[in-house]
Amino acid sequence: MEISIFGLTLAFRFLSFEVKRRHPGKIHNYTRQIQGCHYFLSPAEGSHKIYMTADRDGVNCQDCILLKDEAGTAQYHIEAIEHYGDSPTLWTALLVRR
Image (cartoon, rainbow, N blue to C red; front, side, top):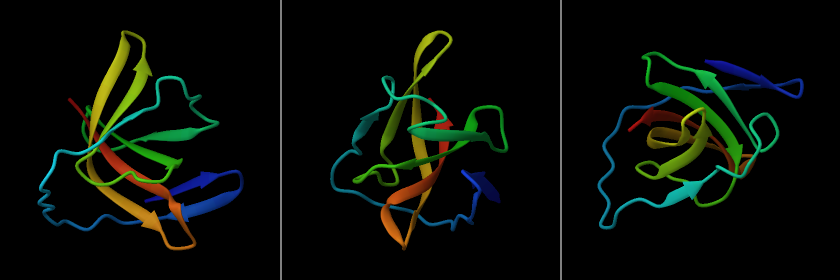
């Protein structure tokens, strides 16, 4: 899949693997951030899945993302994530709505 942001095309693929953590994932609150400025969303397969691209450190697989929606706040689980080598804080993740 490819996403074009500010004339820059980001291509990525997700690998299937299981992540076992000793502690629960973090919760990252994006409800005060602006979509299209601080983060970007694009549709994914399935009605409750989306791709999110953002530039924030410390975001990992199994973490949760809070986003603002028409009903208030929606919680998403990070099913898969790819960090870009050129910028370790830049990532694209596959989110599943909880």
